[in-house]
Length: 376
Ligand SMILES: *[C@@H]1O[C@H](CO)[C@@H](O)[C@H](O)[C@H]1NC(C)=O
Ligand SMILES: *[C@@H]1O[C@H](CO)[C@@H](O)[C@H](O)[C@H]1NC(C)=O
Ligand SMILES: *[C@@H]1O[C@H](CO)[C@@H](O)[C@H](O)[C@H]1NC(C)=O
Image (cartoon, rainbow, N blue to C red; front, side, top):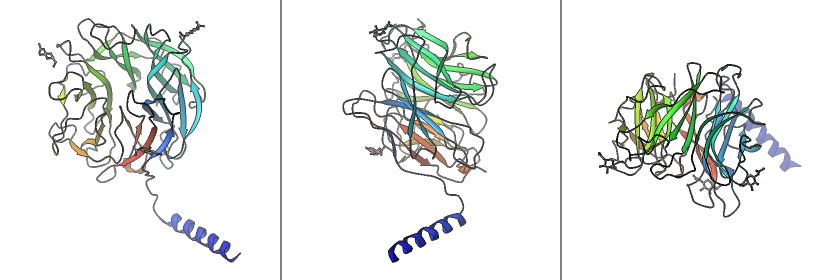
């Protein structure tokens, strides 16, 4: 009896004390989203925050990963610390039973697009049927925050999955709404001028798609840029990052381009990323985000697939101002990064789906706290 009352007094005291403190950023080291059965593999975790706008609370976040013939969608209501699976997204436009769906991408539509309401969650991926006869970048949507999914449209179709020169397949979608137009970016091996190039197609209704517009296409056929991601940075420009498979300095060296519009990267000069403090050239599967924290121009944060470190830049991607910093997280194949809304953009959620091709992987997430002052 006596012991119990001491416990409840302690609890009261803790609650009273917490209420008088300023809200703390909800950082945490490592949470497990999915631990697959022994012998199986996962990779390529991708996420989206929902209902961003009310930054007094952490908005819910959805995540998924590649690992079979459908995507399992998980939801967290506490900023990524705990997760519940809420649905299985099957791609219903083709027969993908026994096949595989690679490279998911989740994106909550921030404004209305044609008949599609703001708040709709898009899901893309590269669907490959059981007989491996084609690659299909398709778009699905959820109007109930990821609980159910339906087919929307096919963005791009290519030949069988095959990274050999001349094999005409498609890979790795990335979704962005910009100036009332929805763009799906992807890697394209169908153009005979390029082993692989990066391009996008635009839609004003998510149903019909415009022509292929090139974003990164090297005159040298074999160089093979891949895995484009992008963000708007502190000076208003757009930065895209990608890997360059046959780069001279380091295989898959991360490169980037800067442009005034995310629809106009083609003519921009590619720059190889190199940390000025260590000389490290990050390599493979980059992912970029831009929190406004860290200084007047915010901070560009880039993850790759070769290092557990992150690469940050507070000077609008100035080539001599990349700094390699400890991430506090393990290495992973195309980890992804999302700014946690609110908290002065001091917090980035990092998702790790495991290393490509390895078994006994784990889908996990954790926070990275931005160095420097919060966004004003
Ligand atoms: C779908 O594909 C699988 C694997 O290739 C095959 O076994 C199955 O018969 C197909 N189903 C239909 C309805 O065609
Ligand atoms: C094209 O790139 C490859 C791979 O880096 C290189 O070996 C080759 O010399 C380049 N070709 C030309 C014409 O620059
Ligand atoms: C996260 O924690 C799990 C155990 O829950 C561990 O296996 C994994 O290595 C950790 N990952 C990182 C990146 O620290």
